[in-house]
Every structure is written in structure tokens, then in C-alpha cells.
Amino acid sequence: MTSTTLPAVAGIGLRAPHYRQVLDTLPPLGWVELHSENFFDGGMPVAMLHRVAEYYPLSLHGVGLGLGSLAAPDTGHLASLKRLVAEIQPQAVSEHLSFNHSGQRFVNDLLPIPYTRAALDVIAGHVSLTQDTLGREILLENLSSYVEYPGNEMNEGEFLAELTRRTGCGILLDVNNLYVNQQNLGTDVDAVLAALPIHAIGEIHLAGYSQGEGLLVDTHSMPVHDGVWALYRRVIGMIGPRPTLIEWDLDIPPLDTLCAEADKAQAIMNGGGHA
Amino acid sequence: MREELDWQARLLELIARQEQPADLPALNPAGLAVYRNNYRVGLMESLALFYPVLGQIVGEDFFKGLAREYSKQVPSLSGNLHVYGGQFGDFIDAFPPAAELPYLGDVARVEWAVHRSYYAADAQPLPAVALAGVAPEDYDDLCFGFAPSCAVIASRWPVVAIWQGHQPGAALRVDLGAGGECALVHRQQGVVKVDVCSPGFAALLAALLAGQPLGEAAAAAMLAEEHLDLQSALLTLFQLGLPVSHSL
Image (cartoon, rainbow over the protein chains, first blue to last red):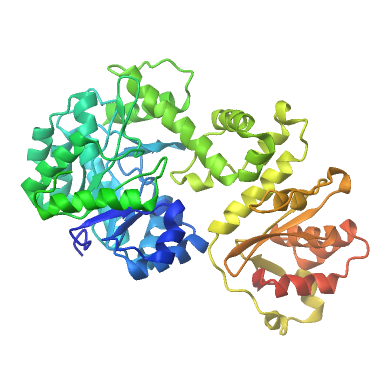
């Protein structure tokens, strides 16, 4: 199975405050994405997810697998994800190229990994294990990072490209993360984009950052900023339309606001949108 | 690989143990501060989601204090935040600033049971007729498995009235001197319910949930409530669809 069968249109991240409104009014959404971990144990959330899947193409986006954790893959978490994916059969399954644990200790965040050849060997194994367990290819997302491993041997784009080549996984390109890294870490956006295999980019994320102390913080708490729209327009110009998600996870606005953001992304994909 | 592994382990420690100085080479302190804040706030916000009644009782500021202290003392052990916070009741019982509200710990235990019940997997109830083949002399040795959405909390405080009084639209009428209540948390047709049950029923269910055979569970139940109608209590368990398996 290829890494995604989502339509190449704009969609929104569906979060708890909007579950009821979406199911009651069935607004025209291209597709929706939900966080996998909110549906791990079954019960009422999964019943709701089945209903959503009746009406919309659906993507399950993981925030807790941490498959860049070099010590060991989290096989318990992976087993839960396998059950969920088998039951829901979503159009896409994605994870982050990040780590979150070492031994028993977890930090529930998306922490940056060392971009080294040795780490690549280990993480490629974790990606393959994940895909073999799920019986399908996944999309891997680039990060917003606030610290960097001092001995990096390649950039994130090169690392992702090599993972794609070795494992057949796809890429979820978060344009906001790329922009935030450019501003915070001086990441060379052109070099990262040049490294990514265009055919493997199966999905795009857009979100709004907030201004921290001397850093932009990827809070998903704002409308998409102008600089990110400009970069998105450039990316779409390079690679053509892709399933594009508006993510909003903090200070979540009314559904109409999310849909208006999705419309802007759609206008850009349709060509010539002035967001 | 050793260097990469050590770097990940050290970065996790630095984020989770916030008092440590940032001693990783080339680590941007502002960047570390973002991760430290994300970690602490993420755990605190999870607790606020799972414990809305506690938040109403003690107010936002006090709750944040509780949650901050808990998040310092209890590390996250899973990539799934839904399982973080299960010891909040025990923590509150031992937290001196909360001593003035001695029922808080039990309210927390009810809220955790409600949270877990909502996310618990579906399970097929065991029909009572499944016991038809069990010989009467074996009844005492019967053990039951239960729906993962069910739990029971026995309290010296009116925890059910407190919990129900803090639900949306409810009128808060709680007499703290009214005596203890036992809370039965269970899910019916997709709705998590918190109901009062008798002390004997609670003791019976708690013992069975702990894996004790029916004979021992019945003895514990009679000890908790001398005049418990055991047969009726068992019937209620089945009518609520709580047992899902049995074994001898």
C-alpha cells in the first residue's frame, strides 16, 4: 500500500471541541486528521472515530511513538497503534521523526534526533519495524527543533530522504516547522527542500507559531503566518498539490476559522491564491 | 552510536529534571527552556483535563500548584499521555496543603475511574445463564473478569454527591456531614455513570475485581454490610453487564 490515499486537497485537524459540531452538521471538509493516541484504548472515542470515517477521508497522526528513540522502539505503543489502524483503516498514518524516551523515562514531546549515519541505521530499523507491524507505509514528519545534536553529519532533509530510500516510507512536510527552524536555528530551507524526494511527499502541514523568548515556538495556536504561506506557495509551485492540513491545537478557534484557513491553502493549490 | 544514545538520555534528563543546569555542550539554553516548559505544561494540562471536578473545587490556582508538584514528583512513563495521572488521589492524600479538604483524594479516584472508563475498550457482557453449568458446590471458587470500564471506590465522604454536584447543569447540594458513599463507575450505552452503591455491594465488587473467588468476596461483602442480600447484589452485577468472563 502506498503511504497515503488522501485526496490532494486541504483538510483540517479535527479536535475534541469540534467533534460534535462536525458530526451534527457534516460541513464540506476535504479530509480530517486526528491524533492516534486519543483512540488507543477503544471505547467511546473509537465509536466517534468510526462515525467520522463514514463521512470524511481520515488521517491518523501519531505524537507519541517516538521512533527516533535510539535506545529501543516502544513496542507497546506500536501494538496499540496496530490495533487502531487495523480497526479504522485510515487513508494515511503518520509519525514524527523525533524521540521521546530513553529507558523508562518519557518526555511527551517531539524531541530532535542526531542526524548521523549511525542513528540513521537504527532509526531506519525502527521505521521498517513500524511499517511491517502496521502492514503499510507511513509518512514521517520533519520537526520544529529548539536544540540540535552538535555532531550532525547531514541535514534533516537528507536524513529523511535516506529513510525514504531505505524503508519506502513517505514524507509529511510541515512547512511551518521548516520556517520556524529557519528563523530559530538558521536552517537552510533551500538545502532541506532540495534534498527531499518530491515524489515521497504525501502530505503537508500548516500551523501558526507563537513568539517565545528569542525563539519562535511551534504552538499550533495561531493562524498561519505570512512567511509560512509564502513558503507554502513556493513548495506547492515546486511539487504540485498535496493533501494539506491546517493544524490548530491550542486556543482552538471556531470551526469556521479553521475552514477559512483551509480555503486559503486550497486557493493556493488551485493556483494563484493570494493568502 | 554511544554518543548519540548518551545525548538523548541526557537531554531527556535535563528536560524532565528542571533544576539541573544545562551541561550538554552546544545546548541553547532558550531552546532547553522551551522543552522544559512544554513538558511541565503538557503534564499539567493533561491532569486538568482528567480532573475537572477537582479544578472546580479548589480553583485554578490551587489546582495548578497541585498539578505542578505532582508533575515534578511523578515522571511520565508512557508516550500516551492518557495514562498519566493515575496516582493523583494518593498524592493529594499525602500533600499537606490539601489536608483541609480531606475528601479530595477520593474525588480524584472517582475522576480517574471516570476518565479510564470513557477510554476503556468495549467488552461483551457475560449472560447470567453462562453460570447454569456451574455446580452449586463450586460457586465459592468462581472468579470473574469484568468490563474494563467499571470500577468501584468506597469513601468516608459523600463522593458521588460531590461528583454529581459538579457536573454541567447540576445544582450543588452536598452535605459533607452526610456520611460516606461508595461510588460505582460504569459505562452504559456509551455514557459513563457514577452511581451510589451499598458498602456490601462495593466490597463484593472490589474483591471480585481484585481476582478473589466468589466465596471470599462474599465474606468480605458480608463483613462490610451485615444484612447484604448477596443474591440480589450478584443479580445487579449481571443486570449492569459488568462481568464479562468467568473461570473456576
